[in-house]
Image (cartoon, rainbow, N blue to C red; front, top):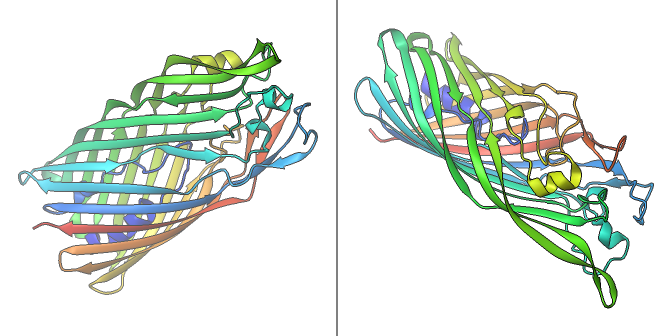
Length: 405
């Protein structure tokens, strides 16, 4: 009962992840370690966010000056893959290998949005590039874990994580405030692989389907090489014209440390209560490309507060083959101005999942609705703000766990 129910719970919480708390995607779970014997697991989630807002255009040269401009749906849909293998090396020692994409972003705004404007083009300088405010960040992680089991249901967890990070960001409005004005800023990073670690403890009591697992994920520091480019004004025989200038620079970017607390217990025959708490130290994440900071005087990406994300659910075993679960999720709003490259602030969610067991396989599916919190983002100048309200996301997920023995 415990194993089957937990698969139904996990697909609600893990396979249907929405962008919550900055760039967070996979949740960095280690539940494969608690499968019996040897097993492989494949999970694929798909999330379709609907995140839009508006901002007053206060750029004097803009044809829409003074008007309120819609951003369009800025969050693109994304897939969340997860692949894991677990085996028992001895009666006391388990090994697991996990692939996931723990962090990511895929954001782009409408072409007429104020922050998508290159001021050189607005004032008629020939040669100015055109782009939109956008950001794409991708991570791939492989985590190798060991779990050693002691008497009394206690165990310790430890392992190493290799993570690859690559990013691309365009902020066309950047440079509008310098003299002479510049525009069309864009940065492209190389892919960089760096390492972190995982530590944890767990306790289980199978008689009542109880488990508590506490895991710590270290920060990972990436030293990124990047190319930063922007338009500058130059003189030609025909008059002023924009030319593209680029510089090879480097920046340190940290993906943040986090702590996961996962728990479950039987509360009645065939009934399981489960939940999780996740803390992510987002203020550790700062991206400050030197050319961008010289143009704007601010970081390209930073966060003021850590996030706390909670989930609580109830599962029920309807038959020997089928179990179902419902999960509620919540992340509190911080109330601060957020980045335009991640314009959300907290959420609540509800998920439904089911698991069907057939011979050595457990097939789980789930769907989740997320009400994304309203947010305020910085605009084109002091006192100018963008508002993002009434946003949401739908997620679906499929998971297959196959026992190898």
